[in-house]
Length: 100
Image 1 (cartoon, rainbow, N blue to C red):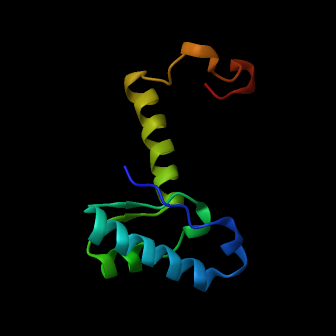
Image 2: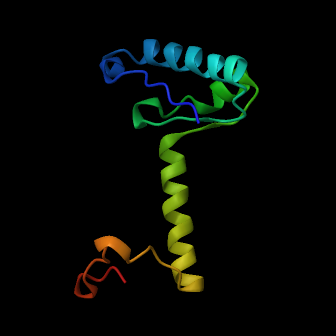
């Protein structure tokens, strides 16, 4: 697994963030043989499609990916009764709050 942080100082300059992410993505594909790029920060949301076309590999948008994961988990719970692990203190919200 290859992780290369771009830096949060890029928040103010979206164009530079996009260019930096594209450079890092290109390096990951060409130098490390990456077959998919997983964007790790919501600051990088919105340009995954453009990067994917430019790099020739799938690029996962962090906002879309997190929403789809949440949707999948909700579907698994409602249709199969499968929920998150209860091990090590990760507990469900109280039923009286109406979440389950």
